[in-house]
Image (cartoon, rainbow, N blue to C red; front, top):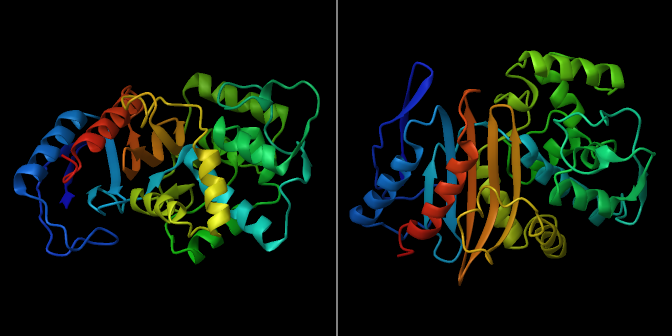
Length: 336
């Protein structure tokens, strides 16, 4: 089942042409044909939720018990923001599995990354005054649970972008690409071309942010030069993790346990029952909001992979993702 949109000027206007597929593509259940009434109700609710949202919305949702799917722009490239930390974690666990690294190894926060407490950083390590040394395990947990940027860049001194992208390609995700760490991606948004962080460059980034001189580059780049994925590929990454097929069954379980501890519940989990377990990773920066993972609904885990890219004046992207997740959990055809 697919829904389409057409662009008019700077706005994305829904056309909501419903197509009932005789062969549901790329991982959806081939034996499933939704009723027109059920599909239409879901389409109407999604349409109402998106409304006049000034930007692009990509959705891939799949009930992992029935294999029923919903797709909207599922194969378009979207900037990931911090969702790119999931591929970084996968490459980390691949290296641990192969014996190249150990989770108990200790890493010192380097001086070559952006590490000053400017507002764009997420996490807690930015508040430290003295140099810190943490285990790879703890750096990974900080990277996912509180989306710590400094922990991420410390890991990426070893788990480099090229190796992350290569691993994604080998796993069958050619559109999931990592082109730079947090330092590089933030700097590019400010027009700063440097792979090494410094207090001076951090100050320049802050100044350009304050002046509103950000570019559609770095974390806001939807081309292969940015950190990108498609809603379908990120959804399938979580599906394969659920089935124990990412790195190994043991690594998949370990990664899901970390993802279940993600602190933010502002997007996919927001309107779900408070006790709903969600193994997910959020992302958000200038023009980008995203959330992807597995929602453990009673008796039926569901993959949700929702990405938005919007004009700077649009303020409701996180609210929209929360609304879409609520609708999908309640109304994905066959769940009634």
